[in-house]
Length: 525
Image 1: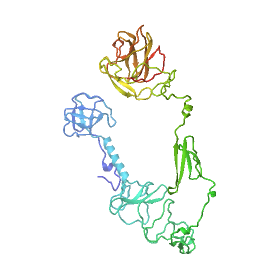
Image 2: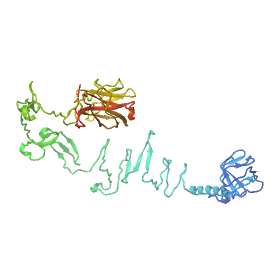
Image 3: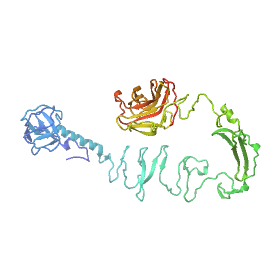
Image 4: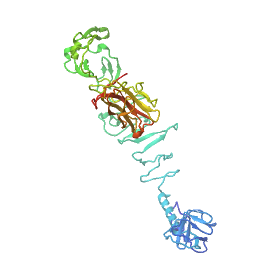
């Protein structure tokens, strides 16, 4: 019989276990050899009497713990337990149910350890649910521990950790309120505290000896005192009692009456402009958002062909300024250009024409191709609708969206233009900008004679990438010939791969000579 809780149990009360290796124990025999690493042992029958789980077996000198069994097998076997060695056993070996002393010893030690942790009736180490308990030393409580009602002891202390708090359940059960220790080692309450009449605080001295035995309530500098109702009494402020123009002060220095200030209570004072000798005046002058200066006046100056009209508008507290510009006079345009422009019928001049930057790449230019950026125009032959054109679909090399997408309609797309009126037997260079939207594509460029019977240049294969490139071919007309064809095409003989999809073209150009120009000019019909 156990002695707990009066005294701690020992071997005499929990009994000394004994091993059972003989005296006709429960047993069976193996039906197959058992090897040292096997976790399943097959037997004739696990029979009644063997525990269903976590039983202990002995085979020869080995002790084995199994986790479960079926009709003819012990499974989940832990080999070589309780200090024995896992070994091989033959078929027909005897398997016995067992209870070993080490198991009982471990159970005994566990029970004794629990009893020692709990303590005895005269010196408990735990808090009982009911009844008074005297505790000593620091004790840790789980979150939400509760303490019953009862009389307060004459002396004693419940000590909480620094992060602990004392909480009371609200009367309506909607939450908890209480007191905790904050980071400054001050008690912080999250509830309104009512003090009993005459309650005092603290024991340190107060400057006024008359209040030395009353104590002080210290308020944090960021806090304050609020009195919902009742009276808040303070020591005299030092202000002399009496009636002043706007307030009345009582014997304790408190203001007991007062009146609002009127405009006449403030002395009149006027500053002159001379009084302001430093600092920024309110009138700031800026140009394009940048400060020009801060002055009392803003002077607007008329310029050539610009006139100003200013009018004071006191009703709106502003000055209105109208700025007008006059048209240029005779001679001013000539002076700006550096030459006299031709502006009358019959006036002309001779010499080279320099084209400006609009829709060009730059330089002295010539271009014998028509509709150089409009590949949808009928001037560009599509060889029987072998391809189609999506105009102005792509950003061109000059930054404008004027490049065209040429889409193969057949597997042999061709786009070409015939040029006539050329120099007899002359040499001509065909340029064109080209790219693809993604990856690469191979196409061929060519110059064909006017009868479209022989190539004067090419077909020359070029590889298009996602970057704009300017490609060219150069051919020479035969004697007596003054026309030719410029061609962009899919040419199987070169191994081109423009049988489907788009290519992007822009800026077709035909110039006389063997690459005589690097520049380009846009042309129309």
